[in-house]
Picture 1 (cartoon, one colour):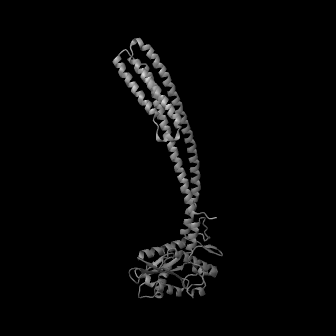
Picture 2: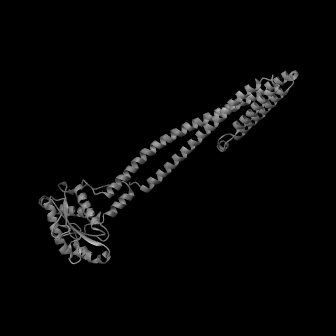
Picture 3: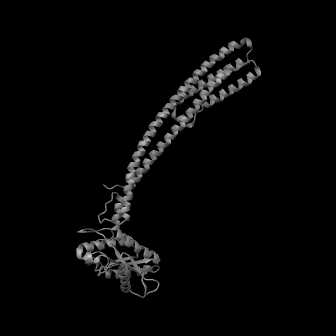
Length: 398
């Protein structure tokens, strides 16, 4: 069963969304752990402030009042900070329990602060009793601090456990998504490569994705047709236009080419003689059919490809410039050189020699083909597998 690229990317987006949500949740837990740690720091600070308060030296009343007021102010601020709830805590912690503990902490801290202030301002005669009252309030206050600390430690442990589970889940899911979709994306790239490139080993290319399979079928634009089906316009062995078909197509597209320049290229197989001697007519027909498929990769709507009776391939191009037309011809040669062609005796490699020129209006297509054939011979004399074209002077070649 073929894979669907649309479904692959849809599932990939869903997987990435899940990973993103998981990462956001993990980040949330890390913020919560930081928040809980800050509260623990404030609670520990209150322990130190309590010790500082109860050990205040009352021998100097003015200095004692300054120290006492400073300590009690710090305690009030620390209690407020340790009880502050963020937006996230309102949703993720038990609101009733947290409110109850925070309220008890505030009440006991206020009682302790009042007792400590009364003790610091009391007369020596009643100072011992006020000190006892303060120490009792201190014990109650410390008990509430310990209960809040226990709660915060439990919350930290819960968040750490949740973070561990989330991290392991994200890691497992991430690795799974990576390997699954790495394989899927590699397959898509491989199928695209097969669709864009001509086979180099002569074997039938198979793809595993629906969309690329559809595209490749659409790219197979030429089928074997009988001459009767096309009114004698098609070469019976290759299914390409014959000479009559070339002229018919050229005349039918003439009006559409008004703004473009017409270039003509004629290609000949360098190994043609040996191929004729060693391979069947069907093999040669398949070979020319594949040559037509290769040229069709560079063919534009107004272009025409033909297989002549003398087994030359003619390519009429409508291009904006000579450079663009020449580059397309060079690409055809390189693609043919890199490709393999299936025959009954195995895969064969071939190269082309070509003649390239500008079709001038005063010459017919047949006359231009004759001129291009002279350039083909020049290309073959120079070693083949190249394109020969006229220099700026009409009587010389390159």
